[in-house]
Length: 264
Picture 1 (cartoon, rainbow, N blue to C red):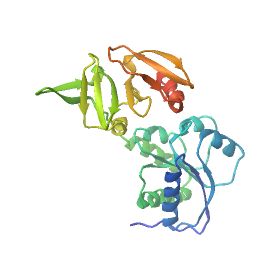
Picture 2: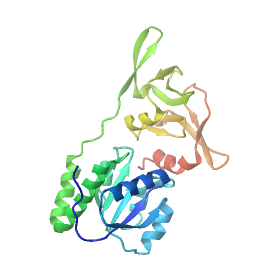
Picture 3: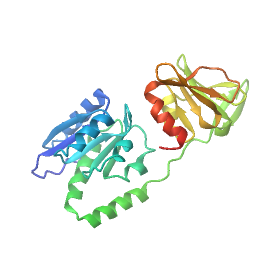
Picture 4: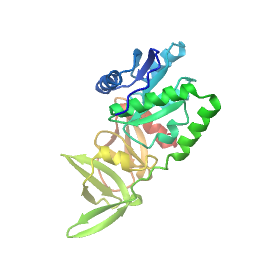
């Protein structure tokens, strides 16, 4: 396992992560890397980040989770200028291209490993040595090397004793019930599939499907109307005859509205 290049400098680190367990695990990996460092701030929301970074703090590098409790980190990065390098961490690989539009030096998929942290920190030290032109050239090369994400196009389901293909444009929603995941087509037919909703978030095109709460993921083509619902939530009415309460969780309302508008 490659160790981190020693540069004889205390590395000042900012961690942006809304899950305490993930934050503690990340700090352990950084400690295990053997790098001399100081955690100057641990932030868990966009609002806290806006306050912290607007005060022009002294730090060297940021470890930043993409999904935070009050939105994605890109909302933060579009609101202010952060010139220091960023190492992004996320559960999904669909944000890689967008991440490298910002001052990114690496993109780590969770759960991170010690080797991932070592590699990212070595990239940081390497980039510190090169001039700006070479740095920008490397960034362009990274972006061009990332392939366009490939999303699932169809599902194979069983109808009695036969197998049938269901394409994405035939799907109304997915929902979880008693440990099983169901696919509902536009005719209201219900099919059990061997994917969790968490796995479907990685396989489905995020422009087409949105997970509105812990148990339901819907297709944008099947949304007939959206109305206000109590406790600052939203209620969805679908085009199909499938009947189920479609309520957007309060903590997903903001991202859901952005999704409806076509804003990532």
